[in-house]
Length: 281
Image 1: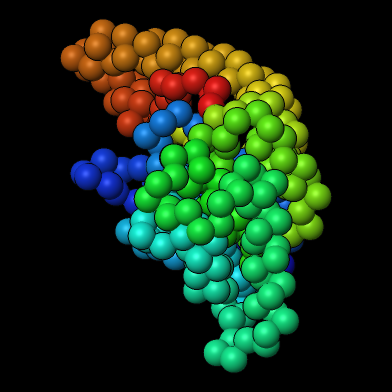
Image 2: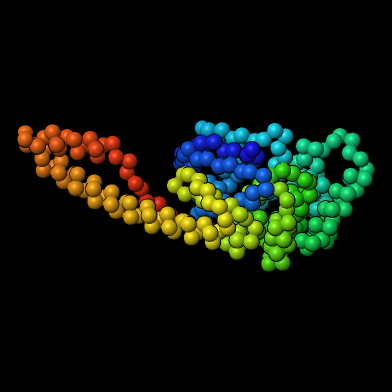
């Protein structure tokens, strides 16, 4: 059973179609990387999965009682409140398991875990107003907030942005040991290779699924690309020959029917198109 299914969705943003009839599925325990050049709609897709945006066509199906945690590229916090207070508020609001009367020991555990994560990510002043923090510190704070509460699926948009090597290494270890499923967007190829086992490539308004890390994706993609280019060249040659025959014979009575037959073949042909972009994230 799929945890999350994106079923033939279409999304138009600022009069541009980001994806058309695109599909995606996530199974339990899968570690997914979404790649593609900037502007293809990767962040929008993640927001649709999180329920923050709706597709213009198609459906998103989530398993019953599925708990999703979403990390945006740059989260919003209350700049006047302290770092720890913001994290605890974000974690509690975001959890569907949050109870009105949370036991005191649960609150203590939540705070203790938050402080431990913050310290590991280089945030030591728990009362520092978020407005005083740098972009990198706020990103690390957001990671703590998202990772603090258990969930079924993590959605991470560019989680390594604004992180230094030490903190990327910490996040890599965390995700390698993470038992549940996650989906992340990243341009960091070594990071992808270390943490994902499924790649979805967003290109030409569609999503293609590849099993393996980024290096495996690139290997398979290059084979598919070569095959597609060969088929494209062969078809273009056929199209050229058909058009030439139609042009030379459509006016002659003796060959008009043959020309019409070839024109019908042209009209019905599913023309192969080559991608205009490169797969490298």
